[in-house]
Image (cartoon, rainbow, N blue to C red; front, top):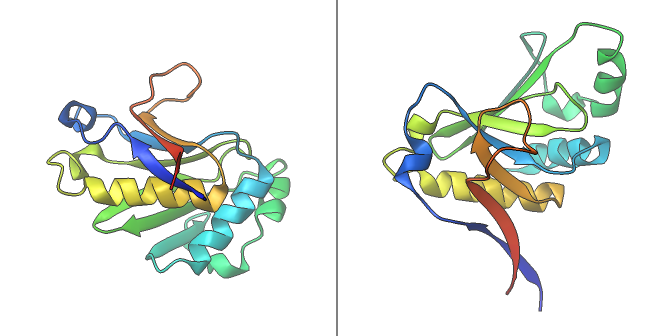
Length: 156
């Protein structure tokens, strides 16, 4: 018997009301190996993605996460990855090696029709990174904010 991953909670309209803030999909207990798994998984996925360093498009296949974070300590450099699942774009900035966080506009999910895109992305992200994934309101710290959705392993 193998574990499968699902998203707890389900769609609740109040979680996606446009209130001026984004929602965050966070990979918990991240680090360099998690970032490396994430980049490989995006490259291998069939989802459309965009990647840029300092605002310039770059091939994600040639990107070294470890080199980026090593040089980011000494230089003012930025990287952004956007992944499209269905009609929803999830944006991630490579700002902290200990935190993988994708943001999205809750208005894109507000009617519930695109909730499946969020569920697919969270389940895929949990499997790709081998970590628990949560959705919260936008914040700078995720350890003290209520979790709106989360992935969990279930017997399958």
